[in-house]
Image 1 (tube, rainbow, N blue to C red):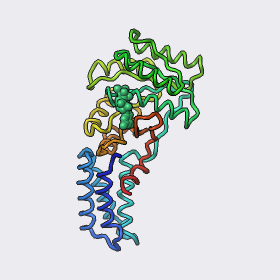
Image 2 (cartoon, rainbow, N blue to C red):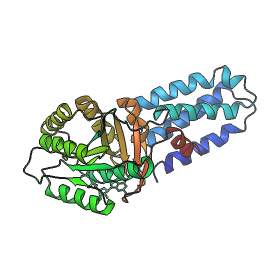
Image 3 (cartoon, rainbow, N blue to C red):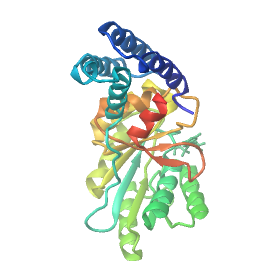
Image 4 (cartoon, protein in one colour):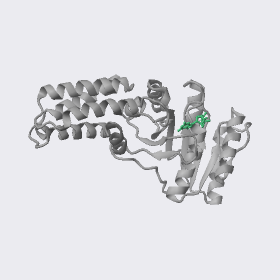
Length: 297
Ligand code: GDP
């Protein structure tokens, strides 16, 4: 599971300070130094670490801690609150359009887990929100992607709209939305094409779909195993498409977790879900506070 290394280091640091009846500036300095190193080691973006540490320091030597009866615990509370707010504060919800169907566009690089996440999200919406989604295969460049989505649809017993690999993705998306209206599907989840790298053709195609379809959400699927690259990818997609949220996949893997902690700060877009495995029920709503508690123990 992600964050194991970070959690271990931070929990060690925390133990040293929690029981203290008095916390000196020197204690705060040492603690923030260790927190800083632990975050950098977990591959958190250095600018993000710098800002976070500055905020923790400012609050930790302030009144709320120094005048508290349990200053050690108070310092940890500050660290937890700042970690939570770094990851987005409140948990954010998936949009519901005023007029059905709500349209969600899934974007991301090849291999990030986009198609799998399309299926997982549909499953989540049906199971937890009683929704009736239509999946749409707009990755026309990889015949295997269309087949993969159809297989997911069969596994989930959910409709999939596809027009093979000859049609234009904008037309496919529009036809799918028309069909969803007819069949009363309240969500349309569009699986778009991915490439190995961010490139102009990909972005242009995604921009065309966005301009025409006007999705209610654009979720970027990023692989948390790719560390700082995930953060760079998120920055480019956000610049080009103004995404509405991020799904971090493969958080079950042996990742250092830095991406999860940097993406919100760098893009100012919320992490909405975390992929915790390959199975279709292994998608969790992302709760910043719970994640901070998991890290801090
Ligand atoms: P796409 O090219 O972005 O559509 O990626 P796919 O959906 O085909 O996924 C690529 C691989 O990542 C597949 O083997 C998936 O099973 C795997 N995968 C996706 N999400 C997760 C996750 O959260 N955890 C793990 N362990 N594997 C995942």
